Image (cartoon, rainbow over all chains, first blue to last red; front, side, top):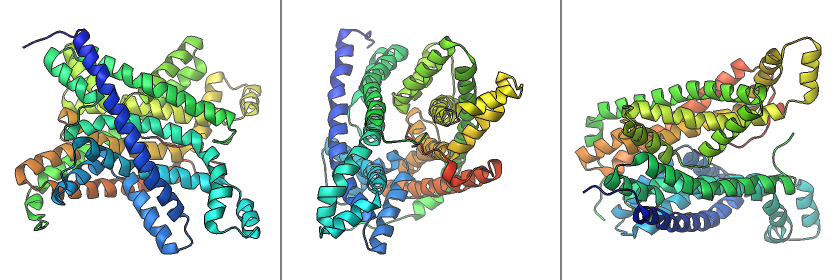
Length: 218
Length: 233
């Protein structure tokens, strides 16, 4: 049955966007929590902990997101866990997110001048208090532009979870294309929708970089 | 849980995986060479062309950087065949990777070009170099030398993103792995093998690109390099 690309199909595409956004949100929050813990462990006083977290970051950053997705998908089912597709997909994206955010945030923490550590230590703050009251508030400001920039990468990478059967925006595009055979029009619309999400975020990242006076050296 | 790892069935299909690995290597090298060449052309157009050329290059870069690689791949593979241009999966993959990588590299090189001080260009012009010569010798080559680390990580990210080309049935490493998985029914083991190969390939590519940088741009110290962040495709 051939159908043409009309309002119903366009509506189907646009309504699939909410899954892309939800997936981005869950993966970002989950990956952010894990990434934050790893960033702090990466700067731990113990060399063994530093090495372990550095290896984790290096390995995840050196394998395709697609492989993270397949490994966690099949690994979970071998472990006997039958997760709903949304959860399985956001879990594997969360692992990917954690490695990149950990590295961005480690850089931000290290960019805080070391005198801040010394000054807060001389005020008898514990390491936890140093992070909580002195370092993290300053690091947060430094990390904001690259974190928003990474969010763009995450939105785009949600498009690959279609392989495990989750219907988000790009999978919806494939389904509509299978029914209508108007690939140029359909994937053009899909690309446009992604662009409308990602471009403002890219601009926001660039704007934050400018107003916060951090980022690349000139 | 009675799960036992069985790698023997996968080892028996090694030739499939090897062919896939080779296609990944060739696609990546092809995209790196063609993509960087296109990026240099885009940068030259942005620098030497008029306002219109500048706007066109910027629009291209923003469009490519703010849409997913999968969608670009589908547009090229399915879209072009809809228009009567038939490309094989591998050709479409190479084209998509080249166009995508060129946009990212053009943006990275732009950061390097911005870091070249105006007085450098003026000095070049005062020595009676033409604008093209200034661009090539005073601006472009030092700029690329400065951003080489960022370019290198972008190249590695593109190699990793080539795994997505299996979506259009290209038989590169992840596509070949999917076939091995279907033949052997050992899904987890298949992807462990593929992941290990990607990891080794990424480490090897990083080492090679580092060596290329040291040979091609020997005079740039690590400190002088512009810090720009590579981004995933």
